[in-house]
Image (tube, rainbow, N blue to C red; front, side, top):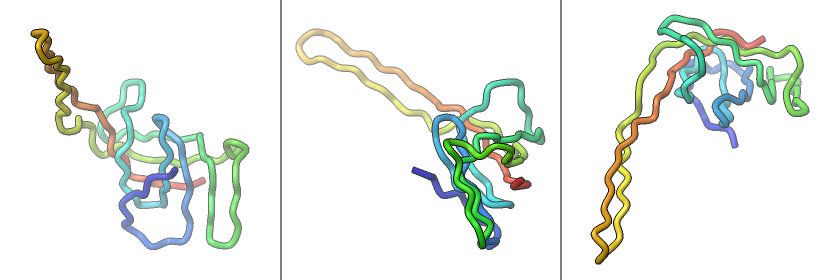
Length: 116
């Protein structure tokens, strides 16, 4: 299922990309919060998503099997951070068992620059 991105423009053209095990519906100018990408990336770097599942430009639609060959979506990394802390507690009554752990999931925020 595709996750809706923040809309900044109202163009008809959009694509559905896959990254980090999730699918995102994106258009040019959108800002999307995605899973951390492997590799050495900094704010301002450009990334290219080649796993494009669908492209719709308003008049015709291209659907991949599973991906569209030659289709790419370019984006720029605007923010690298970690989400709010999630606390995990394991507890068993009457057995003196209690474990408390915290986790902050890393994320990238990217701005879609070009659909090709």
